[in-house]
Length: 264
Image 1 (tube, rainbow, N blue to C red):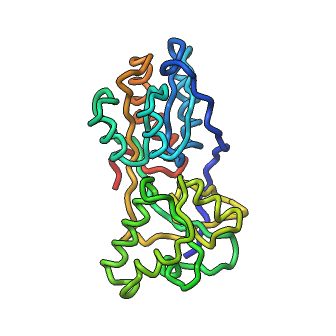
Image 2: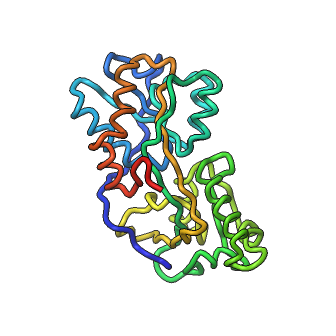
């Protein structure tokens, strides 16, 4: 059913400019490449880390996990990578870009974003309605993969009738480069629904509400933190990755609606 989320107070954040030469630049500075769904909360995590580590500065580059992988491969200066799936980190690790083992620091789940008020989607089953304008993140983006996995689970469960997955996918009008881009289509009135993360829509939003994805078919998104092998500040980068799983870091993530590391 449609619902409003419990309040969480986060201000919007734009991606900060990335230094042009080498990692975080000055000693104590680091650049974090963060998945788009982490954009808001990573601002608060960066501020908390700076308070706990005087003299440090955290800069953010926020984009889809797939875009961040491409940037890293092309030599963009990064110190810590926090994608919305372990797969992206595993690929970079195999290619020699990462130092150490990526560590899970948060989890998330899917929901359906719809225009606020009465609309064609009141429940997850309504995604199969003929003519519905649905938007998903692209297949190479974690949110896009998670959404399609949820639809496969729904089809396998049989709860929504035969052909549910195909009917929903036939309603897809566009595949966006990030989950926030998919959400933007709903905000602009260009889509009736988009499958996003539960953390993507703040409580009290006047434009977008969330419809639950049933727990039986929902997908557990897993965020990992990885330090880049060529980081200019390995100590600070490792400290930031550790901060994400610290008591303070986990509290910030939980307030923003993310699950704690290790939760189902």
